[in-house]
Length: 284
Ligand SMILES: NC(=O)c1ccc[n+]([C@@H]2O[C@H](COP(=O)([O-])OP(=O)(O)OC[C@H]3O[C@@H](n4cnc5c(N)ncnc54)[C@H](O)[C@@H]3O)[C@@H](O)[C@H]2O)c1
Image (cartoon, rainbow, N blue to C red):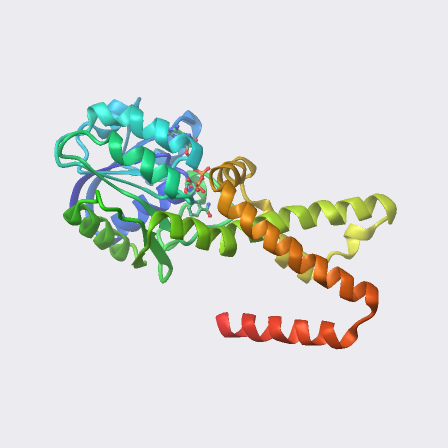
């Protein structure tokens, strides 16, 4: 399907996309470029990419498809750096976790005859870099594509087929809808996990050895607080308004819970937990 794929940012997501498409036999050659030379050398050594490029121009100038998987706040600058060297007909897509501002900034950067398609694979781990990538990361997971009125239909179909070849189920969503949905189901849980670790750490200052008792629940709940701090700084800043809105809603829920604990309202608490359990069981 693709003769030359350029991956910009050969980390967990970029590396896994390359591995998945190579494993599916839908790409002939993958050229990688990454600002971290050690990571890029490791990507080549592990066979995540077939060749490495010294700069954006060398990476994209012969590419049929460019996949950007750099931190979201670096995405627009990376697309700007690639744009002058894109060959005619090239399709550019990304895997960034925030879409509205990013898609609005990247679409107009495309030279005549090149097309941008926003995307976000709903899969990941708390690990980073080429060494963390694996071919089955996207298997059985959703991938959201965020076409707009400017999106070229053939480019959209190509990107959709590639994600399907990587094992994903593709759904399309408006960029702003995407940002609101993922503020609630992904970005808020990360903020809660980060804050919970701080809250327990503060308690540890008062109670000796408290962390020695942290068992399954605390560890399961806070797994995502081990995610890359700079990536989550970027996501929090780029999805600020939708995130603030769900943080407000969370604070209201938490305040109600605190009030009922203080009031000793066992009936309310049991009902509340029963509803939470039912809702969560339905999702799972
Ligand atoms: N990790 C996840 O769970 C997950 C899930 C879905 C989407 N995403 C998105 O995927 C993107 C990449 O995340 P990741 O987890 O693969 O991170 P990562 O840290 O594993 O990889 C990012 C790579 O980009 C490189 N890089 C940074 N700035 C660059 C630039 N300007 N030009 C070239 N290379 C650059 C870094 O050196 C790094 O190797 C982010 O936009 C993130 O929002 C991540």
